[in-house]
Length: 267
Image (cartoon, rainbow, N blue to C red; front, side):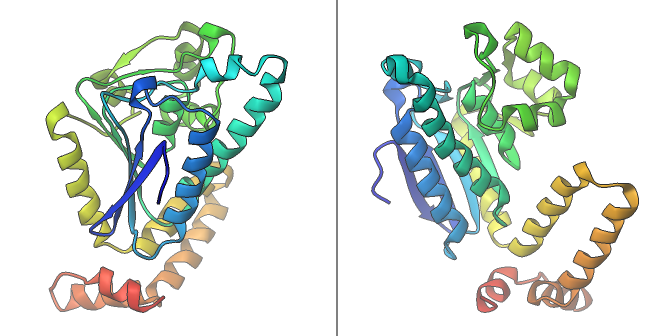
């Protein structure tokens, strides 16, 4: 895709999304938000892509919203921010709701909406040089980019409010301890490690990943019994799918399942 601020490359069924405003800390302006939404739609629909990895160019993941461009709107700042967040939020919704795993490769500072974006990833690996800060309350603002949804669910309400009220900065190890990221990786090894993980997942049962993700998110609003009811229905459906049949057959034949071939042939 020919974008200026959000680049997409496809390799081994992995869609690599790169936030590309390094001179501005990969801060999110209106054009970047629009491009991110377009890329998210493409990634969610493309049969060539089975896993999506998001990272930043340069030495930062994203410092969040581009405050300078927002301030330039003057009296129109409110309507401008509604446009920016409309695109950003649609992008996050597509990335989160797609069947494909969504992995963050956090290569530096993730602040504000950048940190919210990390929280929205299914899995997140971070460079040992990364830092995380919500930063909104510091300038009298409130979170966007799904931060108020995912952060309390990840770290708990009191810790989430602490991060918001105090603007406390977490280093990579603290972010791992709090559950915001899965693993800390040496900076020079980050992309290599994440792409190895992504390639392994790309060979896995993509539709099963998607249904698992839906079950987990729905569980936040269900009772125990209603959630188990959903589990029963989805499990039965998956067992009769091409992926389920291949997985069960491979297990019984004591071989590796070939999900990539089976899933593509079923579409």
